[in-house]
Length: 218
Image (cartoon, rainbow, N blue to C red):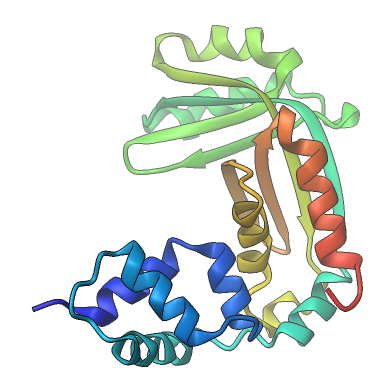
């Protein structure tokens, strides 16, 4: 038996543009239901059953309070940093105890040098300026898995009351997805939120954020 709700919700979760328009009340539910039936090849499924699943999808989504969220976004500060390198490395306990300290020694904070470290279960990432790459490579050696160059950082500083509303980061990431901009990495150190994109996308991504955050009645 076809699980209409699962298929409908899965379709919506993979369609950020449609999801955004649905949340703003800009989509005719019957037209959307017919699109889902056609796209998912749902044979002998009525539009009414899909519409019912869409309404349950809307009710299960958190209330982002779009107007209030936009107000908080308008108080954000945005800055960019170019020529960033993302280095993926093996996850080893030694990095916290000594290797990171060695990298920190070559980082010049007075020049605004970037140094970020993200640790997962199986791997970790070191994020530095491109001009420091060769020195960092000497320190990391054979533990390097992959190096990604020509990366840019967009640093978003949320207002003091960022935790009073939900959806700040969701709207930010959805805006990039809607416009087909690939997100290379994200780092949260709230109230700062950092998004990393390819150098070729930085101008467009930055303009999208300016429009999203500071343009009224959008």
